[in-house]
Image 1 (cartoon, rainbow, N blue to C red):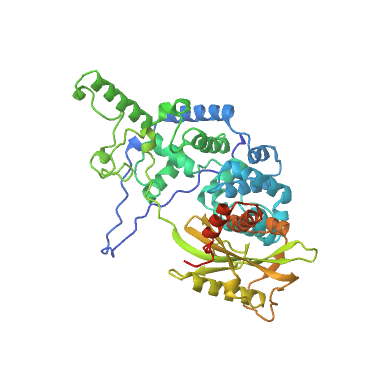
Image 2 (cartoon, one colour; image 1 turned 60 degrees about the horizontal axis):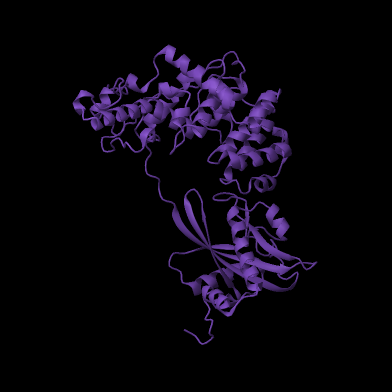
Amino acid sequence: MGRRPQPGTGPAKRSSGRCRETTAPQRGASCPAPAQPSAFHLFVDTAEIEAFRTSLLAWYDRCKRDLPWRRLAVSEPDVDRRAYSVWVSEVMLQQTQVATVMDYYTRWMQKWPTLQALADASLEEVNALWAGLGYYSRGKRLQEGARKVVSELAGRMPRTAEELQKLLPGVGRYTAGAIASISYGQATGVVDGNVTRVLCRLRCLGADASSPPVTEHLWGLAHTLVDRARPGDFNQALMELGATVCSPKAPLCAECPVRPHCWAQRRVEKELEVASRRLLGKAPSSCPPGPDIEECAAGASGSCPLCPPASEPWDSSLGVANFPRKAAKKQPRAERTATCVLERSGRCGEPEFLIVQRPSSGLLAGLWEFPSLLVAPGLKEKQQREALAGHVRAQTGTAVAAGRLRHVGEVVHVFSHIHQTYVVYSLVLDGPGAAAPVKREEEPELPASRWVTKADFQAAAVSTAMKKVLQACERQSREEKMPCTQSDCCLRLDRSGLDPTGMGK
């Protein structure tokens, strides 16, 4: 933070901008150059750029949040450890709120303060600490990157954004820019969700923010604006502005330090002025609608790839939140999984639960879960029970009748692309030490499995969804042990699908 850029560093390279051909070009024909964006969507005035930097950094110095990774980035003298600490924070903060990350980050850096320490850890340990943070492949890729730095790069982190992105697995354009600017003082911009929102509002970028033309334009703006003397602080300030002031739905425009540079805000002010004139009975024609700034000529004709589409007019009720425009999110696919919480009495009488390890790739790779089976669409409840009972038999080597599986209920958990419903069953096996997991040599195709106490389960690398499954079972057990009236008991039995009268339906 505030470190001078190292000699020889500079902005990250921008895309070549080659267009994608859909038909074979004629011999001698050249690919047409992309249209230059209107100055309306750019920062071209040197004085404005300098004023923007000064205002934003002054605000950041006054208002920045005290976060553990920021403190470490300032206090850590070793450049490799500093870069590693920033890398960990940036990976954790992807798709995850700051408040959630703070505790995970502190525990991670206490457990693995160096690249070497992380490289020496087991994946099981990494998954256990990451459990509950979501997007579990991030932790695995972070460790893979640490091992590569230790084994192939002699423990030395790459020193530029370009090298970071090229050499480290899982490090993309944004993460590379964040590490390089904050840790090394490289004057390179960054673009994440918060920066995207701020820049789209500053320069009225109304096309789909995820489209290639808009994405490249945003990176160009970020590289133009970044402060050369304090690139790390500037990038964090721009992200901080998006996180705390220029928020998605309720931006605090009155508190914005760069409000004078915001085209979207000027548009809002002009709309209010037009509305006021109409209320006073003045002719609308005396005050043409639209911002009192240069318009995008190409946008007026519908040919600008950065302007809002004509089919999506300005919504006065949204104000600056008209920007950015996003494509409609793809709905997560629905899946149903039958899950069995298998319980036995341990050596000291303490309940133990069987958990099995998921495959090393794919969703929740390498994590542990209760025996679970993906349910085919339209499968009837009886068939579902039988399939799950067979799965449990294969896992334990113990005959399990489908009728012994007790229905607990359903637990819903939404992943980024899957709306998962767990149909939860429970089964208590008789006798202490009952049903040891099947040995590998007998069933080599089975995943690893083990019996754990509740404390071991909570400390293991299990997903939040599995913890919710266990909570559902415990909740049912507590309700059954509570004294209740006849009507309460009938209600519970009815919810379980059983006939409370015993006479059949």
